[in-house]
Amino acid sequence: MFNRVILVGNLTRDIELRYTPSGIAICTTGIATNHRFKKHDGSVGEEVMFIDITLFGRNAEIANQYLKKGSRTLIEGRLKLDSWTDQNGQKRSKHTITVDSMKMLESKSQDKNDSENFDEEYRQSAQNTAQNTTKQNIPEIDINEDEIPF
Image 1: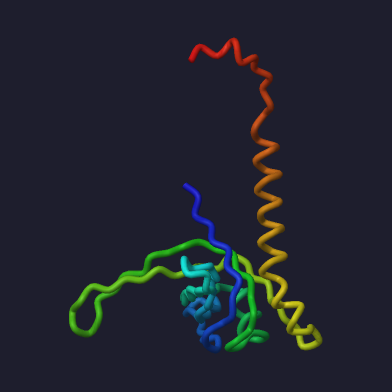
Image 2 (image 1 turned 180 degrees about the horizontal axis):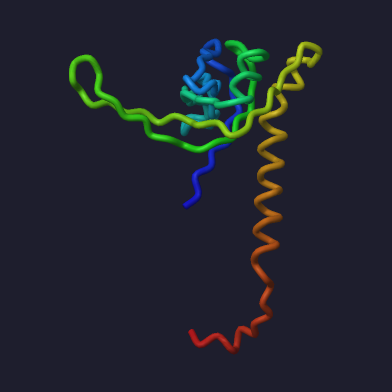
């Protein structure tokens, strides 16, 4: 099975860092992503998603040191289902992302317009990569239409 998630968005809250008894760093925060689309009436709609994320080890320590609420970040990881029982005895669950790698998209010297253009550049890059992968994996077959039995 393949479980891979790539998101670009802004952190919704400051990093919450803690350590396990064995000394492994764990941090939690949230990321907000948005999707713009054209409605039937021609107006532009927007769908915003808020997703909790968890980072471990060195990634957690780096995130704690350099990221804060509002930081624009690219994360790559896997989808995980967390389940628990709340104070009222109700079973609860939510999906979170366990982050394997991250990239900070803003620096102190970077112009805000550069980071706003990242979404489009990343989308185009991902689309080109997908097209190239598809082309590489599917061999061309020369078939005469008269040879097809249907």
